[in-house]
Image (cartoon, rainbow, N blue to C red):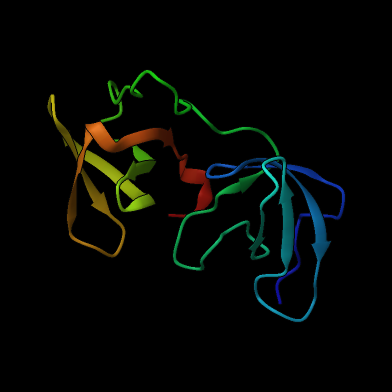
Length: 138
């Protein structure tokens, strides 16, 4: 297992779940960083702060939100060409997309997702959109 920069008691921020505290740092499995969030949920991360090995890092030491879900639809203005994490909520539940916005119009954005083909996302289901910097190793 890779050494982790996270320590028990650290206050951390997940781009998906918000603020939390590192509750445990294990040694025997890949996803060894246990975080308990203010919302009451708990999740596991690898030593790099990733929920899944093939996804970008989502766990940081400071907030990374540029838009939070609210009654006002998040703006995608100025994000074409940027790498983003998009959270969507519809009748099928809560889901996420990672990728670079290649196009947008009044109804949708188009993402070039990592490892997948282009994905069209209707703006009407976007609950939050977060710009993700290059430092997370995409």
